[in-house]
Length: 167
Image (tube, rainbow, N blue to C red; front, side, top):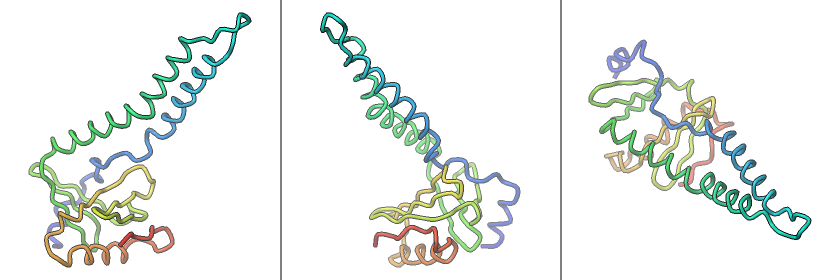
């Protein structure tokens, strides 16, 4: 296991993680613009007419920003992950090693701040809260794999910032 870590020296931290909050401020700005368009559409001119163009354009814009765009982003991220091929993840005392047929990337424990456990996967959040690493529980081949991974995560991530796992 130690020799595996030595092969990772000098390699940049994992960059294939999904940006969790990178689009967050942009989404709120676009939502505000859509709400402004809807508000402009709701204004009544002196003849008592609504501005239907602004109202409909704002509604379509909000639908795109809040419903369609996130789905397109998720689809794009899924395609990008599939294009990378199968991945193997090793979690040990030094952190995560993610390997593909063509690449090996290492991320030490200082990169991560806490994790969340869901019914089907572990989500490990980076210290700057901009990236996530997903470890599906179905990928853990041994029956006690979930408990072993949970123990490793509990050992290396600070108790004060770690989320309570849903067991």
